[in-house]
Length: 119
Image (tube, rainbow, N blue to C red):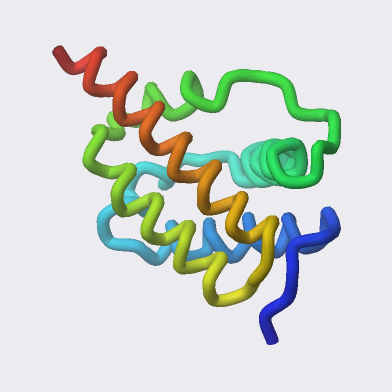
């Protein structure tokens, strides 16, 4: 049953379900083969808790950690598709829509920065 994103547990479910999709995806999984999941998942959960629930605790630059993975700007279209699909499968409401908007903004920023680096 779909529910609203209200708690840190909801955010954790969102992030874990999203990365489950990433790891099964034939386009994006290759970029995460050498990921230290014990370190990465908690950071992404902190990031989305900060974005959606205004929870302190996230510091750092999410772009820099992705820059060394040879990800191209066009990969963010697929990333956004999987993220939105994950939300639509599990969540409804204002925070779900906010998550999709934040993800879209991140994708646009990442794509722009990557295109700038590629040129």
